[in-house]
Length: 358
Image (cartoon, rainbow, N blue to C red):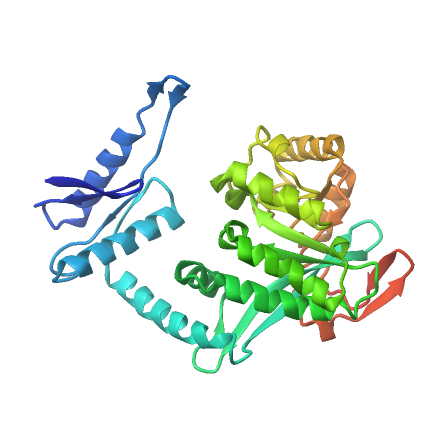
């Protein structure tokens, strides 16, 4: 075969090989296993992982460009579905590309046509049932495509570079809503990896709240654990700068990625959000309960709050309260909804969500 480095940490293989999918998958397995063997550097023992994407001629394409693009698409699928795996480009992926192309074309017009909107999901004190803040969630209804899942269009927006425009558009909508909320409520807003890396976007976020006269202390930015770990030093600088400007920072989706307690002391954040996958088996798993207790103690020692996502049953809520966690979010309290469907009543320091539905 011919082996070439095509940039960064990506390499290409051109091979004359059987078209049997099982044999190609076996080749991919051998490659990834070989790359997983630990090796020693001056700094210590290092272990890496790799994923493979294959495109078979002529089924996947007749030209070099087509084959490279489709091998790259298969690689992207491998990395997103299960890192360290191998994926072969098939007709299923061809349909996905066509669908993503439609989404990409429609998404370019979505901001201009005001098709994107914001839903909100309450962040609740599980003990009192009172709402502390509302997380903004992007929703898109396309006249051409109908309802498009955020999972689909956010991924396309990140890949095409339109995510920053969408972030700023939705953030301004959310800030305008926030101005009409009781003063005790805060807005929790998600930032993508692209937003965190884009200095201009971060400056625009601050400019938007200044224009609308909203204090930064009423805004919490949620940044995923994976985004933080992509560039720990840069992320740490960004979060510290945002905190200095008065914003709150939430480390989102903890438990879905690295879940490492060793790096948390390096990050500046005010709230740790535990991913819903972490509590799926909490009722049956004593070990998970012990880990959650440890995280709660850690948060207490760091003087940061802790929110558990994905609470769907009264049993989960009661167990979390027994373990010492009071701040929660999930369908048990309320599904995401437009702001005009959330009937909020001011109650001194807390705000009661009056239409919460299990």
